[in-house]
Image (cartoon, rainbow, N blue to C red; front, side, top):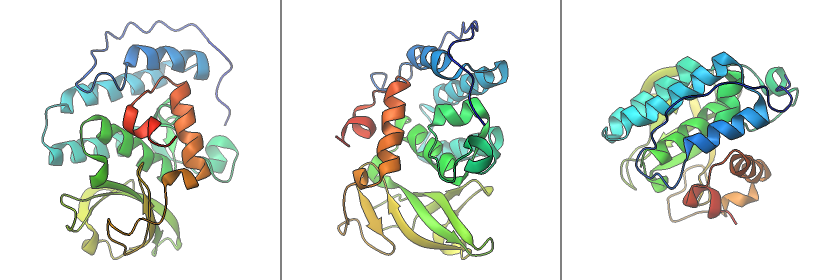
Length: 227
């Protein structure tokens, strides 16, 4: 599915207050860029506005509340479709803005949106990994977001297949393959001290960050550490 051509005039008087960590995301810039890049529909504007409202509402929540709210938000505001259905490509990593503009996402896009939103809400990068798994019941590759309360703790799994956030030991349907975040890559079963390389080894990750720059995101850690 192709996004619209350049700029169709929409009135976006959103009065978007910027939450803490304000140097990272300027929503007035992001919304303006979304107009020129994606020509969003009125329903897309509503989804983007609700995203900003989520961030404002959860800025001062504790971490568990942030995990629950962000997982639930994207699961409920995006419908699952394959990359072929959305983009006409076999494998495409969409930015959170692209996903909210289209209203659709595959498992990677859900995970990417949750990861970047939680980072902006102050969840440390070292506590999260985007984790490729095999979904045994579906017999296909899948991606989830793993959250580690402490370096040695069992991760919690945020998944577009369910609003319930479960410890990894309760997700026997998922077989980890590898994980990554802005800092690097880890093979399945490795510790935080056995990183196998930088995330920039993943071409789609590099492309994703470049698209986010174009959309107006300037968050120092997630968008500049990859250089």
